[in-house]
Length: 173
Image (cartoon, rainbow, N blue to C red; front, side):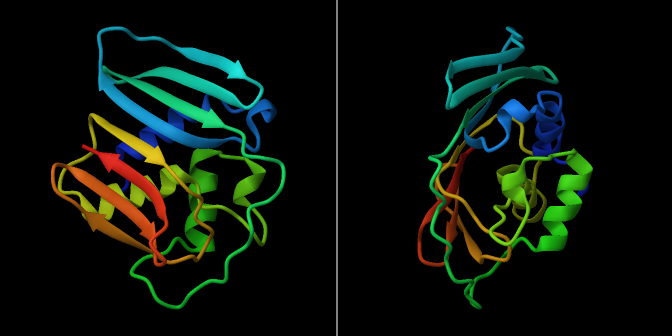
């Protein structure tokens, strides 16, 4: 597998085509890649705080649910020294530059790690094969340099958790 080109980076390229200040502050809540002969494309607004992005991804169909979190900020948690993995500020900056992601929630002292960066690192470091058909639920935010662990479970499920056990994302292969 090419370690620099992942399915998550291909998804980031698709999402880049939908980049707009209207979507600043939105985060990925769910992501689904399915085998489908139907190839829908576009933004489908549910309401002012929820939009679905649909786009072909090769021969497959990508659906991404974006939501805008409440206006009050998430409480900042203290960075812990323990933990198996983390995404550094340099990794986030390189990802943002590579993908053209200009969402302000990924910058500054309380920056959130882009969910697709976590998924890309998971794909590169922990999976033997590139992701193809899968479902991802993004459950909570991860801050830059915040440690996380990868929990491989039975039946093709992988969970990424903070060291306190808080679920960040769940991938169903």
